[in-house]
Image (tube, rainbow, N blue to C red; front, side, top):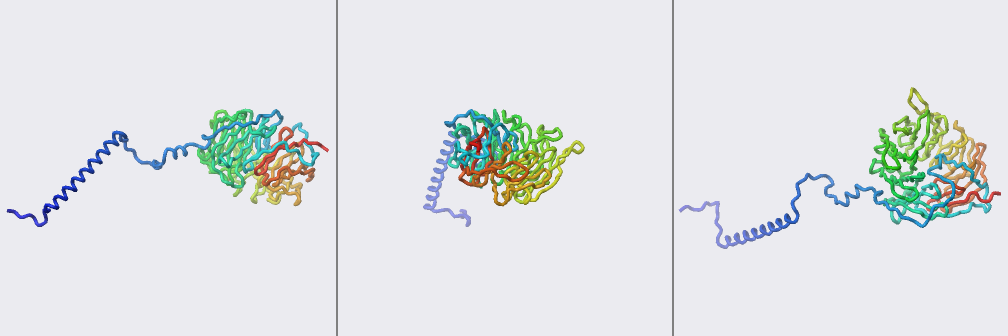
Length: 482
């Protein structure tokens, strides 16, 4: 009889019973698991195996939020207001011609009978410096609704300020020296706005119907500027002109279809600034001039090609004032943050355009922290960084300044029928002669009671629109003349 191997030990009867119980339990568990698998397969058929990709663990809602721009969630809400039959228009930033000048048959009072122009209506706004545009008895202003956390392009009656409609879309914005700060561009067929975080919408101006939108950050990798977008959109020949940064330096978009007609490659990687685009013509070539983060460029209006560029004008903190043409291919640039001023001269050399500096001015001589200077009757008028109103000729000679006792801070100004309207930070409106002979104030009146009255002014039909941080007023400037 063979003895069991020393390495093997047979269990006794009690041990064998334990093994049998354990095995029975294991088989029961396996049977239950098989039943569960059969049930799940019958109700949820197996899907083919796919390689995992980054982001596959995100929910459908997350993916939808990434794919959709806030513009897609926009809503139109109608109000009780109606368009007026009042004459006049101010179609966007710096007026009908984009030069900050009003000229027309409107009589402008040199003094007001009560000492202050009559307030015809006023309206509350979200914090910001966005200026109004006026056309066909309607006022357009880009606002921000803090309660609903939404940009809101509002259409108001020019007669009484009542809201006709508003188009809004959700976007979260924190206070950052105000929120909305751009003036819409409006024509008979289109109104275009650019929101603080670079959302562009184009609407039908009468009904508020949505036509198209662009999210410049999502679609073109633009970077929202410091203190939010300050560029005012431009409409030329039925097309929106937008300086983007990111993948594209500048875009031309058909307002009727939303189709991009051309896109200028951003070969130097310039970023969007607060500067708006200037349309001009030189040597038979129509162009759009823009101050980007790395310099100044002239882009062909026909095909978006770069006609000329220079890196001689760069402001490290914020480029705000728009270039102004002063005739004969000269372009005047002014800035704040110790930038001073620069006059460029365009020339045609062997069929190519080049831009050369003519002269520079120190910040103490002339500059522009926030508001764009005005070229009027061969002279340049503007508010210097020290707050003084000043006038200079096209050769850079300073002819006069308003003096230390007449400072206007960062307030806006315009010229109407030979008169300068200039607003200070606190809403004090000054009327002065637009003359190179000297600073000659005519009258003053406090028209706003708030602060940070920095929005560009608008004038149409004898009515002046002005605003501070949270309130816009419509003033009768044709009042009794004495």
